[in-house]
Image (cartoon, rainbow, N blue to C red; front, side):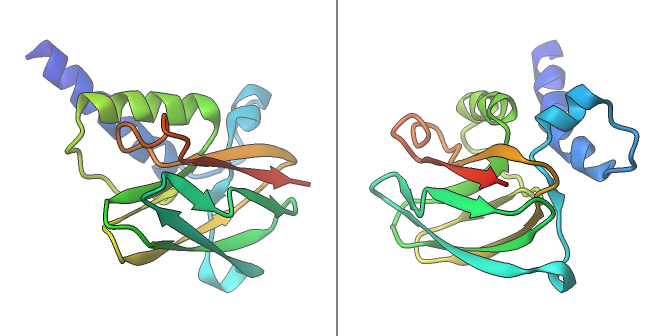
Length: 155
């Protein structure tokens, strides 16, 4: 029972971190780990089309953005398998991937992700707040390990 409660609490952490928003109270370490913030349609400066496929790849896998830019990621799953695109720093993506391995049927939806069945399309609107690199990956068990990952370079 204790293990189940722990797993449930861990599954809520991503929701809680986004629910708090950015209130300017983050310390420098938290800012360094930040992948950005959910954006608003009205602020979108451009759309980047991303395809996910059963070859376990994103196309493109390298994306360049400017600091402060709000991007609409128009994501299409061109395969038959379910895939997802999750934006985050490496540490958070690894933790989320580990949780997904323990609970492969877990259903979740966060502002930094889109999960799509074969043939479906969806959007993520994201604002990148500081220079550096941010990762994205498919965290369905086995997909990231097979190479389904990419990088956003923020200048």
